[in-house]
Image 1 (cartoon, rainbow, N blue to C red):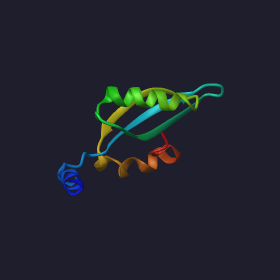
Image 2: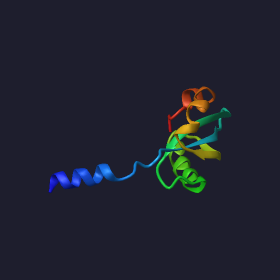
Image 3: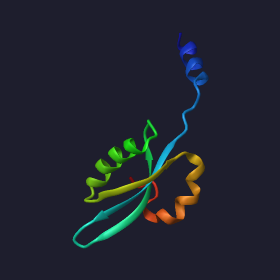
Image 4: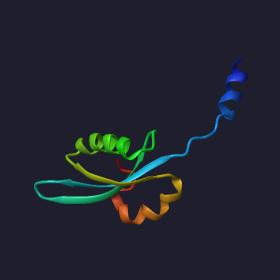
Length: 89
């Protein structure tokens, strides 16, 4: 039984990771940042907005907008621009 469960799990297709790049702000003093975050499925802009707004708010940031959602293929090209906010939230 256990072996069957393991084999069935391995047979399932792997889901691609989902990421979003975004802009956020914090007031007093005004700070802006661009970041990249991993998002859980579904990989949609609306879902990314909901997840990021909550994550950012915990540290006093306000989500301005989600620029794009993408898979692993777009991750490396955004690493430098996101700096310290690369996969932070």
